[in-house]
Length: 324
Ligand code: NAD
Image 1 (cartoon, rainbow, N blue to C red):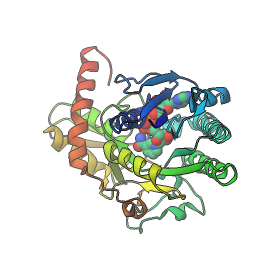
Image 2 (image 1 turned 60 degrees about the vertical axis):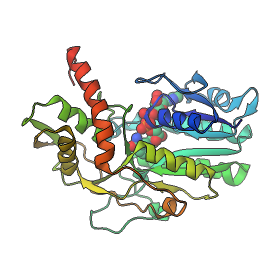
Image 3 (image 1 turned 180 degrees about the horizontal axis):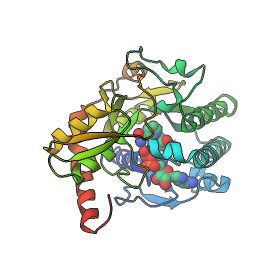
Image 4 (image 1 turned 120 degrees about the horizontal axis):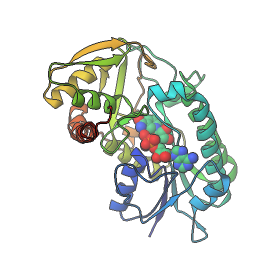
């Protein structure tokens, strides 16, 4: 039986990936600094390890003294735009240590296949009407934030180990991802979860606050589709970084309206100052599509699956008297 290790298994995408690998019949070890906040892990084994520590990375990749067949590196000090702008030092320190030590441990202990979760944040800022950026247009590099620079550097670390140590490395550049069982409050949540929470918390006809002027254009990919892309890329022979993301584009205000429609509410928007990020993210999904990837969920469909879960969390928290 193939043995897979998912680092970041206590997180949003890692939790879904573990579930998918189990459905496909693999033996799975989950690794994270914490247990999953919202559900029991589906992994056969779960190791609570701090992957900033090189020895912990070695423990993560060795199963009964032998290298795991596949290692998926999704652990990161991670959050939405609010976190990315306020925690630059944590991101640059923690995620860099995790990625450097993980690539090193995996390569030096003979892991045959290693996937690194990079991000669309490696690309420069764009205007909404610009043509799509292909993977090679991440260079000349001009990421909009330190999170993007860390990802770009860590891509290069992993790819150096591929070139020099013979480890097969796959680099996935994820677009914004959303779905149930992800962070939905507390400052690390991303826009779709935040909008679902705000809409769930407000009365019908009420007003919610949105950072910026609402015109920034975004692409959101439903988590099941993203996980399908991760599996496809891991099994492929594509050596270059590969974008995984849907093509459906929407403005931030459009996202709020769509969430409200799914919720069956009318909401008014008040635009306030806040960290917005890039004007637009247009990246080409041609490479992953040429491998047979299909995003099965429209944004409306994905939000219809996500909103009820966020609504339930929001209502439970409000019933406990917590501020949401
Ligand atoms: P997440 O925060 O839910 O999961 C990351 C996990 O890493 C968390 O459970 C966290 O506890 C763990 N972690 C952090 N520090 C650790 C440490 N020192 N040791 C061990 N584990 C540690 O984030 P996610 O949304 O599931 O993202 C997974 C990966 O995908 C990350 O690398 C992220 O940068 C990347 N990514 C995500 C998105 C998105 O939209 N969610 C977009 C682009 C890229």
